[in-house]
Length: 67
Image (cartoon, helix red, strand yellow):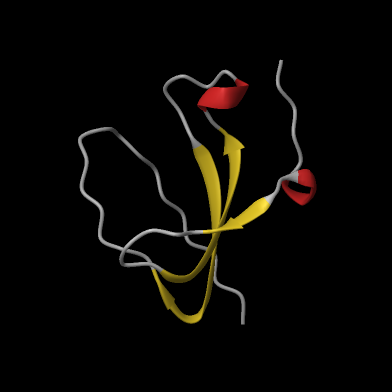
């Protein structure tokens, strides 16, 4: 069983065309054995944005806003 912590997961700047002011933490991914699933946490700065993505695989998205 793989166990991790949000606080211990490295946060990286999202370097993707169409993204500005976005950081991402990869909690579940292929390198830890999750072959068909990714669990990521994005932090978007005020005024930041992500690119529009289109793909065939299923995904669930939840937004949390902090003021």
